[in-house]
Structure formats: C-alpha cells, structure tokens
Length: 471
Image (cartoon, rainbow, N blue to C red):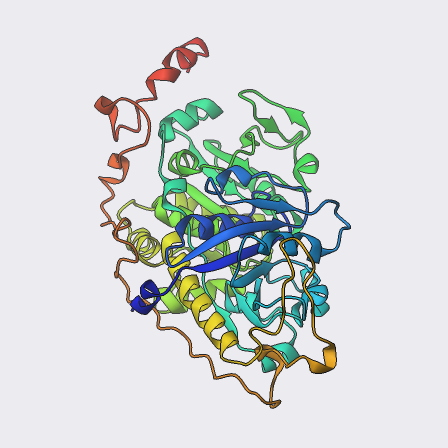
C-alpha cells in the first residue's frame, strides 16, 4: 500500500550525484526520478564528468552542477549542488565518497546499478550511510562485510511510458530503415559493449531465414568495431556479414516507433542488473529473447510465479540456439499469454512512476532513520558554496550504516510494503487493459486527428519525403 503519510510532510529535497548523463539505464533512472517524484523533489543534479548527452531529458528548472575538471575532487561539485538545499544525497557509480564522509549533514545513499564486480569501489561504498540496488544481483556486488553491516534495499527499475509510445508508427520506422513489411525485424537496443555481448546476435544472422532483418540500435565502445562501412538509409552494414544486419543511427531518446516496428527484442547480455529495454519491450507487447543472467530468475519469481514470460537461452548461446529462439519469438501470436502477462505487469508495477513512488517511500525512511540516530545537526555550514565546518573525527558519532553495536544505535529501518498488483500508483497513470487489437490505437502526441491510431499511415509532414525516396 502507498504510504500516504508522506503526503502530509514537507517535500523531501534530494540531490543526485551521477558520474555522467550519457544515454544509459542508470542515467535514465536519474531522469525518471526527476520527472516522477511527488513527495520528494530533486533540487540539483551533480555530474562528475562533462558527458551530458541526455541532459535535455531532465525537467526544466532542475539545475545541473558539473565538476570543473574530470580530476576535480568530488566534494567540490557536491557542495555546490547541496547549496540549493538538500535533505539526502543519492549517488551511484564508481565514486569515491571518502572525501564526503563527515563533511555533510545529510545521509548518503549509494545505489548499485550493475552486477559487474569490477565496476564497484570498496573504498567508495563504505562511506555511504545506506545501500540500495536495482536488483538482488546488483546488491551482491557490494562487499559481503558491508552487506552484513547494512541492509541493501532492492528497488526494481521502471520504464517511462511516454518513451515507449509510438509517435509516427512502426510502418514509418520500417520505411525509414528500408525494411519491407514482409520481413521479420529483430531488434537489439542498448549499449554496444563487451558485457552486453551484441556480437552473439551478429553470429546467429547466417542461421536465420532470408526474410529476417537485424537492427542494432545503440552506441558504445564496440560500435566502430562492429560496423565499418556505410549503407543506405543512414544505416551501416558489417562487411562479410549478411545484408540483413543494419546499424541505424543510435537515437534512443524515444523508442516507441522502434519497438512497434520490430517483431522481437533480443538481450544477449552476459550480465544485467535490471534491463530497462526488457520492460520497454513488454510495454510495447513485443516478445523477448534473453540470456539466463541471474536477474531473470528474480523477475520470474517476483512477478510471474517463477515462470519467465519469454524465451530464455543460456549465457553465451550458440548461433543455432539463439537463431531458433528468435524464430520462435517472431512467430509468437500477439494474443499469447506470455505477451499479455508481461504487458500487464509492466504497466501496473514497472512504470517509472511506480518506481519513483517506491524510491520516495525509501528516501523518507532513510532520512527519518538518519535524523533519529543522533548524527543529524553536527555539521555547520558557514555560507553557500563554502566547505562546511566539520567536527574532528574522534568527536564524530558513527553514522547509522556503520554503527553496528556502537551506541547510539539507530532504530531498525523496516522495509516499506510492496504495492499490490493492479493498484494505480498515480491518478495520471492508470493501468491499461491488454487487447492485441487495440495496441495500435493508443493516441499519439503528434499528427492530425484523422489518423490517430493508424500505424500504417505516416505523419503528414513526412509524406513528401517518403514519396521522394521511393518509400
């Protein structure tokens, strides 16, 4: 149930510290919290580097403070950010928090968005007051000694509904890519990096029938390695690979048309914490082929009574196994129970609004626990943008997360109750009923009213362009 007591309190002021604002899942988690908080409000986003590709996705009016230089101390940008007013600091990524310990009069919550151990710093995590993760496997990245001291709160990610709704339609997207309507379109959506294993999808391409096309939509370190020559329609092809492999421009700010255009989504990753693309495909009622990383079992157990609603292949699958799974997914009926169940769960429990509500409950409890622990109020700020006056280390009372048996022990923080399946989290975001025949009739944001819901009719503004290109 929703904790309605939080609505009676003043809105909690949150500062978010992020390594970058690149188009990744964790960065979009930051943007989603900024947009969907109700009982909390983000007063400032502190960015450790100058990488700010998705800064435009943040709501207008939220200031962004950036470190002067990549090697600048992290406390410099944090102290500038909290000068806007803050009750809690929410961080993620490989950030050394040691310099912040004892200099802030607010609790620090460190969030794990990865299940790759090498991306975590023990020295950074140990200075956080509370620990959270987007999945159980992401929580296991924290050192065991730290997990024994501090409970790791698991809050699953949620996808933004507006990002997954089609604007111009799947038919328009296929024409832009030069993919015939009679072809089966297989989609890879995400970062092109080693842990995502995009090469597995390319290796299975020769095993697919001739009418199958593969669209690799993403960016990352392996992009130039995977694509080397430019093809038609602003796409690229891999030399020596079948002509059915396309690398469209990596525009992933809005994925509704891309998802509607495809017949299935493939996630061939070696590891995932909690993939947003999985939930986005469910919202678009598209079948998913995914590898069997630990989060799959966690999702199946929590939401689907132990049976994952998709096709699961082993880690590092052979080309034959992956190709067979893709063909099964692309021929899955639209009214299949697996598509229906995943669609229902995505819209009722895994929206960005529902995720933000769960984070609000947790943040309120963290701040209350912190303030009841006896640490609150020991740091005195002289003036905005100035380093605070800090008491000496031997006078500092241990923070709640590291106090252990040392008094004064903070009260035990209870896990907030989970919301019931089907309960609306916001009045503006009611659960949607699943009807495969009505999926194309969701009103779009742009275009004249006479073609609302007609996915086969492109936007009027692009008719001349399509005619000129022979589309």
